[in-house]
Image 1 (cartoon, one colour):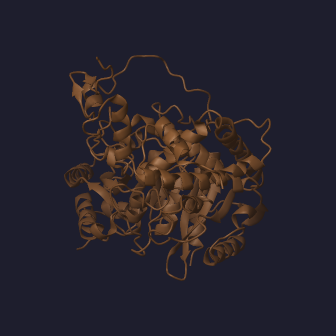
Image 2 (cartoon, one colour):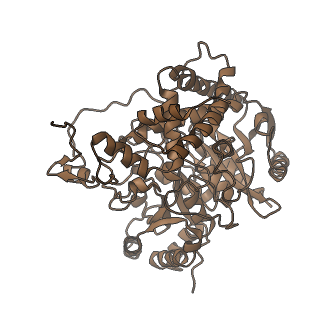
Image 3 (cartoon, chains in turn blue, green):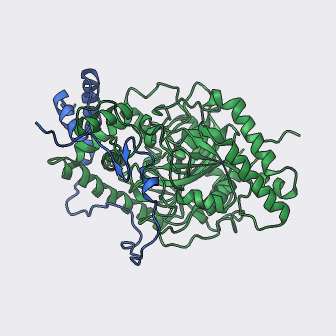
Length: 98
Length: 479
């Protein structure tokens, strides 16, 4: 069984902007270990030189003429934001002044 | 006269055309059924009665005035709650989006409006489509319409339960790894995951962008074909949308394909498959042979690597796609955050449920420095091998036949504590998503407990017309 510690969970949680309490972290460490054991199966294959498929795209990149057209509009784009001011999203203060 | 809401789409369209009843009366009948029975079933997250009735009256008016009508005129349809409808909530069954109201229509919704379909409500799902039982909905429980002690499957469990319980004749679902076929099998209904790129994803909340596809759910193959015909086609707002013409899938639907060659992937019959599902497969194979089809054993040797590759790719894409839900633009924000970072972390940690967090964590892990090549890149290489397996198989046969699921619907709580056991319920469906091919599930009998058995047909890229004709043939070979 892959060894995933609570500290490892905390590290990746931080990268993902998530936080867990102790019991959640313990559970996730165990479950992540078991999932990683299963997915490690792909290591059995010799994949040297096999091209990677990132997407099943049937066409080349989709291009279109760069013509201005109507878009959603500022107020519609802001309508689901928890905090706004005029045409802006508001967030807590980023720069702390001492 | 009470209107039978369990009719097929074709029957409803004919009855509307004959004037047996109006769309308003039909829509009211569906709304009444939902009001009466959905409290126990839990298929719907929201209903828009006034808007649905107004749309129904409008199609009745057009019909009476002899104006042109769309191909689904007056027929009610349920929409999975990860597809945007202007002015209505799109919750993705997540607490983080519980208050989100969409400012625009998904392309499939615009197409449904053009077809004069009646949008009746939004259906429950596993949160952000991550799950195989709808138990990971952050908002409510959906029961299996055949056995209320069992799950409806997932993640489109609300949509398949609504159709299975005869509340509506049609529904839209979405599939990333099996989320249309698996719940369709569990609820005894028919569902299609189209070719990747066939149906626009514009307005579908993204989970695994290289895998996601919207698809139709109905009581029968004909209903699936009618809904597919409406939603398929190129969309300039989706850069992954294919510029491939969609054939008229209804034209030859009733004509069985001539010289049909059906492949049986040996890897899908090995391992633990419920004996009654194996028996259903054997029965159908025998009947297909009697009907003149040639049955050929084929091999898809990388099948056992599909679940690992799928969970690595889907979670990696999910960790990226769900980064946008951070308390800035999309409704839920934690109260009294100390600073910006604290606001991100607490808003996300409060809003997401455990399965979503688990997948974001796994995706972040396998994309991180040191693990990227071994996990993410190698999973993409496995994907190439799986695509090659299918290419070789489709050089020999027209369609592939397999069970949709290893078991029929399982009881609540059976797999929620063991993520791997839940993931393995998608073992027969994920390969079609990885390869981008169209695949469908249709009911074929029941097990000893009366639970529906679903069998799966898979076709080559963009061969939905052929796939649906084959499925229609299978339908005629049922008991």
